[in-house]
Image (tube, rainbow, N blue to C red; front, side, top):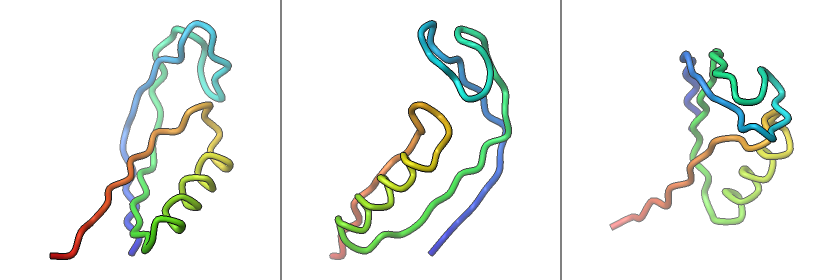
Length: 71
């Protein structure tokens, strides 16, 4: 499963940041892409997060991981 959506976003890099886009301490507005996927197994999820961190141009990419349970 893969879902992709696009939206407007904003961020403000900290004073000591070395941002890929924008300048430290200044609000930057950008087009963002949100990607959602289903990873079966903890090792697959951990590898997906690792790949995101290695490929993403931001110093600290935003991501969330949720564990789903089957009842």
